[in-house]
Image (cartoon, rainbow, N blue to C red; front, side, top):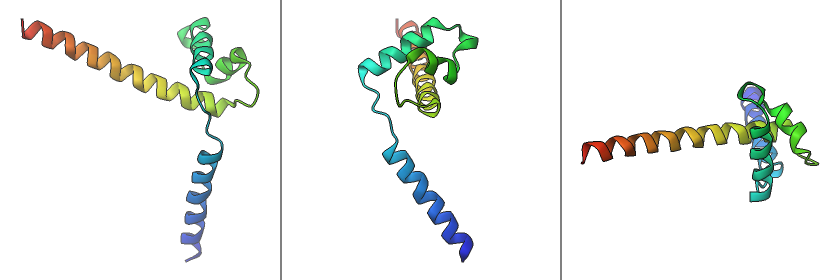
Length: 93
């Protein structure tokens, strides 16, 4: 029983942490993120370095890491969609 209470509290705390500490990635903030990533080479574009270049008060390494993961995920899907679209264009000619 105590184990279940601990798991419930842990899940609830995680929810509130995400709810209260989410970053509103405005277009301006995202532009700073993109500019920082572009300044770094691929092997140097890690959250701590991106955060240093962005110089945004209150932004954390975790915020940047999460945004980087989402950006990589979205970029991957866009690449796949473009790739499949190009194949379909060739097939349907």
